[in-house]
Structures are given as C-alpha cells and as structure tokens.
Amino acid sequence: MSVLQRFEKRLEGLVEGAFAKVFKGVVHPVEILNAMQREAEAHKAILAGGRTLVPNRYVIDLSPYDHSRLAPYAAALAQELAQSQAEFIGEQAWTVYGDVIVEIERGEGLDTGMFRVTAEVYTGGDVAPVSAPGYDQGGYDQGPPGYPSYDQGGGYGPPPGHGGGRNVRLVSGDGRTYPLQMGSTVIGRGDQANLRLPDVGISRRHARLDFDGGQVVLTDLGSTNGTMVNGQRVSAVALNPGDMIQLGTTTLTFRVDG
Image 1: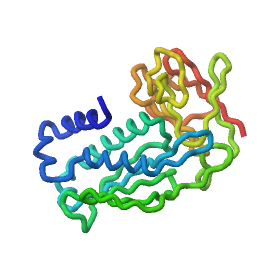
Image 2 (image 1 turned 45 degrees about the vertical axis):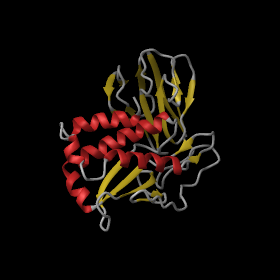
Image 3 (image 1 turned 180 degrees about the vertical axis):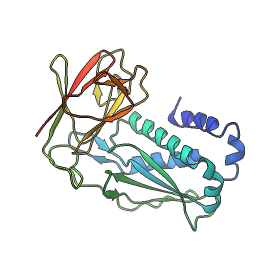
C-alpha cells in the first residue's frame, strides 16, 4: 500500500465516515500531500557524505472557504499530513532536520479549491526559507531555493546558541561505534534506515535520533517492540551521556565527547 493510499485510509477514519461529504467541493487533502511531496523533491540538497536533506516544515495556505470547511479537522489533518510526509521522506531515504511539521493556515486572496504550499528547513530556531511555489489551480511557480550552509565535516552547522565540535556516537555491546551526524538518523533493520541493525526484534523503521548540535532526541517511530532508555519505555526523550538504549535485543550506549 502506497503512502497516498495509507493516507486516504486514515482520512476516512479521521472524519468518521463523512469523508466524501466533508471534502466535496473543497480542496482534497490528497492534492495537498501530492504538492508536499513535490516540494520535497524540488528542494533537495545534498549533504557531505551523500545524504539528501529536504524541507521538514510545510505551511499550507487554504482559501477562506476551504479553511472554514476543514477547520474542525485542521489539527488532526495536519498531523496526518505530517505523518504521511515523514513516511514518504523515509521511503526515499532522505534526511530531515528534526520532525516533519505541517501547519494549516487561512490564505486570504485564494479562491475556493486553490492552495499554496510553503516549504522550509526548520532548525527549531532560525528558519531557512525555501521558495514558496504557488500551487494554485495546477500552477507551480518555482523560485530559487535557500538552504543553510553546510560545513566540511558532513551534515550542517549547529543553530545559533549551540556549540560545535562535539563527537556524538552510539556504542554497541560488542564495541561497534556509530557516529551521529547533525540532523536525523533513522535506526532500523530495513533498507530505509540510516543505521541498520540486523536484529529481528527491531522494526524496519524503529526509532529516530535528531541531533541539533546541542542535544540528541530519541523518538520511537511506532515500533512493534518499543524503545527503552535505561530500562524505561519511551516515546521521545532527550539523551544524556551514558544512557543505555535498547531496541530489540540490541543495546547501544550514548556517548558524547567534546
């Protein structure tokens, strides 16, 4: 089942059977997701080491009429769009800086059925805006993209207020070391994982590590067997040096130097 098919199936549950009625005559969320996928494709940036960075923040401007019709579902719809976009990005083996964020706003001046997608790389502080193509009635007006500068060491430099030069890594029980680069690292046993571990107890996309230069946040990606830190099951947690991460039967120790 494709990302779009999974998204449509979740939408049907979201509106509790009123799917066709709610979206009749207004912009369809699948069109929005398609546009978000095109935005990610259009604004790829190659990092040192061959990893591909794409925008992680998407602002959707809807016409006043569409916005009012979808308002009761806006928060849930934004969450579903973010999840589906994250799945799409993962399937492409692309990298994002932190979580995928979707915001739905009222776009004055847009006619019914028209919408605009603005995509940008969001670091949690400063925003590096990417051009905001209008996606109005099939139009696709593209301008020059803007991205943060990249350093020589791979990944991108830390946001203001964070110190650089930290050697952040995971160490397995058998002594193997896995250095972490800035940005997001997906841990799993599938082809889409950045850090692949041959453990049948680990999901294909099990967990994600987000490193912003100041801290590393571990997020479970809905894994079958869960993610443990120091013996406690977690959904998302900021890691401290020495923390023990358990995924399946694999234990990884979080280390920081510098």
